[in-house]
Length: 364
Ligand SMILES: *Cc1c(COP(=O)(O)O)cnc(C)c1O
Image (spheres, rainbow, N blue to C red):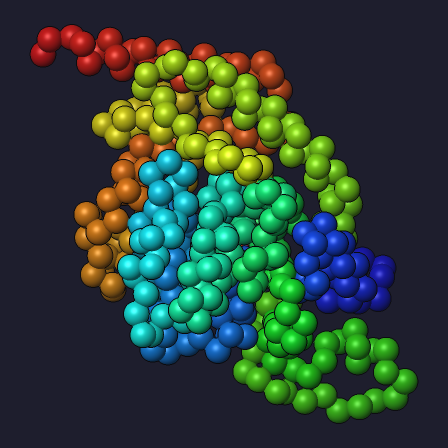
């Protein structure tokens, strides 16, 4: 609070450089949220009215809302039943003459088929945007978010693997795009407050584009910077917890788990199990009663009231996403979780599944 800038200044610069270094990309631009990262990105790529953007319905609504808020049309493509990630072949079928970009989401921290999507985007002259809100620390072989896509968007929202309560970032290897992103996060001005401050005498600023107010602040960057060195250690702990869950649920007929594809190091932002749809809400209630924090990631976006009403979606449109959405339960996953707590969760889930199975066998 006693430093000079508070808003976008040297702390943001340091954080951007450190995150770019971690990801192995040329540029990072700090913004106020992942939602704004997506909106500013679409604006920087000149995607707006009349354009279509293909994305997944198995995501938080921010992804497709960003498209709508630019006046563009989100076109959903169904997902892979094993991972819940957008299906490259379904994307191919959804391409039209108006398609401008693909936004893939690295669901739960498991990186999508970025090579296949890149190839497809290249063939059809589309931009590839990664919604990497779940995947700041995951990778797929050598590939991290931002290395294959034209841009990757990150979230530092309260629940994410890196957090400043609220915040976000955009990673890209394209320096001229980064310059446009920097301008568009601050009203479309020709230079930011930190650059203006460095100038020896007053020069008038100019507005080049119609931009947004979406800049990351030094206050947020000061919270984010000290978290970067421990990112590998925290991911190791998440992996241990995931392995313990996987081992614990082995052979339990009612519990299915999303697949981790070969070569993928998941960021394990979330750990979800898939249970039979007819018992899912019972699992949620009973886990809640056992004082275990649960969530649903996600019921598919196209079936929310707004998307049904305004875009005309109905059940059956994306059957794989709908099936996952009806079966998913997110279990506790954070580095501070202790082994005995993980074991308690496993025991409780198995007990619930046994009660459900026993009730199911009873003649009615
Ligand atoms: C959290 C999240 C967002 C939105 O992030 P904000 O920083 O809150 O705007 C976007 N996409 C996905 C997949 C998310 O999980």
